Amino acid sequence: MITTRRSFARRAIGPAVFLLIAAAFLLPRLVVAQSYASGQPVWPAFEGWEKNDDGSFSLVFGYMNDNWEEQPNVPIGPDNNIQPGGPDQGQPTRFQPRRNRFMFRVRVPKDFGNKEMVWTLATQGKAQKAYGTLRADLQIEDIDIMSETGALGAGTSNPEVRANKAPVVKIDGAKTRSAKVGQPLSLSTVVTDDGVPRARPPQQPGRGRNPAMQPPFRLTVGKSVGLHLSWYVHRGAGNVTFDPEQIKTWEDTRPGANSPWAPFWSPPPFPADGKQTVQVTFDEPGTYVLCARADDGGLTGDEMVTINVVR
Figure 1: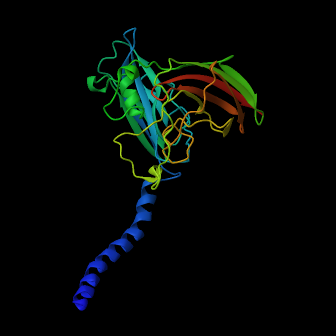
Figure 2: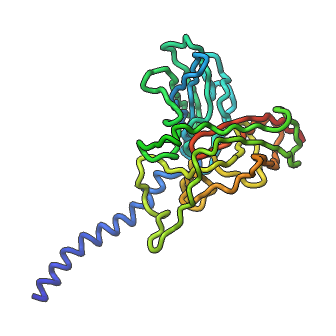
């Protein structure tokens, strides 16, 4: 019997050991093949269209940067243009890492009909296109945006959330400023919001296995709700430093990230008067467009300022 058991054990353990060794050998290659810090393209994305009160429409675009760190800068021109009516239709030239949804809108007239608005974006020597149309099945509303960005679970909502209105952000002062390389510039904002959705208590790690280290279990990304403000670079080639450090506006899902999509993240207390000030410093001359984005976790409101930076 002992001989039989040992023989069976060898037969059973042998394939298992082989599979473990094979997995250990292949897994790093699979991870590397799916995650990149740099060197990958950016994909423009058409998110859908919205109907405006005056009868016109807004075509909504975003993008997917396959890199986790590199932020390509693609100036307006042949490699970054939207037609017809372009090449400049307000699209970004600085592309933040990973998925960035619902980043800008292009307004088209009520008689746009069956035409297409095409965003062409070339990175890493590859040109990609996103086609904006008024196809009936591509219409989006606020509830769709909240679902896609992860504020709601897949297919869920409630009357309070459906009544949510986007926060409004106003930048104090002129919308065009001047600054010098290396000298901090102060930018102040005022944000108003309806208080919906209400911030949930921050999720806490449980005992035993850390939930943050578990594979995703949702069909969509998950996002913590609660009002916060973030600045990011919409256009401009040089490095830009914000003080204090800004909450990320892109879907950084890694544990510990300063991101609404990261496990256990919760929004910092928001000033009662809605006022916030940030110091911004540029390391190269040029023209920059900075965006202040107010985010209640479900919907966002943007305002931009242009900064002409000299030495």
